[in-house]
Length: 126
Length: 389
Image (tube, rainbow over all chains, first blue to last red; front, side):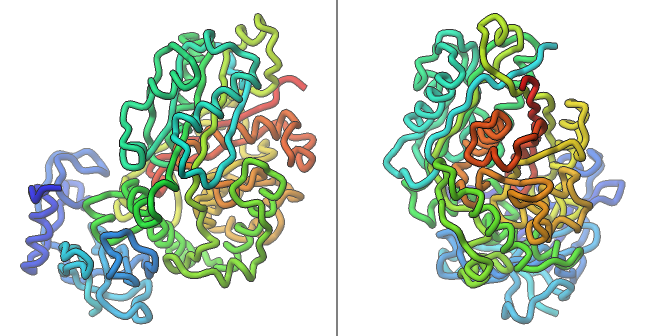
């Protein structure tokens, strides 16, 4: 594929890399990830960008042993769904698998894959 | 509104057929279904075809017409794509069209060719059923997504890897005599527990295989069945579909599958039955945890109480409610686009009494098929009933 940006997503990752993560919130308080023109939970079109909380809690996690080709040299690695309150985010936890469990506190960051150097959403244990 | 009868069913062997094109696989299943129905290709008024990864695996889009011509059918034909629920949603559309009287004779089916890809390529192709931006780019795989559901389930409701192993053991046992099944090999709980990890807590034996294959059913309106004097004792009496957010992290809860609950409730109401009336089910067990979630969504067990059903013997072939007597996706195999209609084909045979496992359900009259797409962002449920002995 070409290196054309994915508007919304790449802006989100840029901001996360700068320590200024955000999410999209509707006037009902539902959180989601960009790009959004309507809230996926209530269809509200009154959306704003709000700062992502500095830490979140691991809601579920898995250690992936069999990856797709794009992550061949990265495995094994931990993927987690992290609850930030108004919004949840999926990413890799940059830690020993034994140290990550449901309930762990993590902070969002951005890293690169070992396989192809692609950026991805990640978390560090706090 | 006319009643919809299953006039015939057809299946290829599910398994490792890397050299066979989808068009050839579907031709075998579809022609076999037409023969089983005793319906001529010229009578078919519409073809509904499910396929998921044809662009990636065969460089082939626009597959509807290809599916029709493979059967010698000259009729409108459309491909339906809903990940692993592709032929399930195709079936739902066909049921509605036949009910409405717009179509008297329909062929519905699906095919998938996956083993011509390297394992890593097929893993990547399957992963695109998840959210590319926010799941796949974070390194999530398909087993990884179900592993997240399993971890959350264990945390919220309890259950163990060993409970899940019993699901795998049961489904392998059910596939033993099924000539269409990819694996006709018994496994033990110990085998499952000791198989290599794929995405914790799921191991290799928690996962369905990569499968090539096709399935098809012929649906007809009741009037056509009577006028042609067809032997079509099974009817599709209920259909339902549910939807959910694409990414797991956007769902209310990672440990349940509400889209399937919605689909089941709609299908039961449509058929005028309840979960208590169901005698047997084919559910979408792409991973062992998926069978657990499915049986809870279908109302067979309360949320959080389905995990040990196989272990307790409730869902085994001699249990009160046999689940996946075909072997399920786990042992029969999962040619993604073909799975939904293959479930209906197996249930039809089980109800008709001409399935190798019919002996386990001699008095069964009501069956349910549950077909899920992605991590159950799509779900479609159908109720089948034997209407003529």
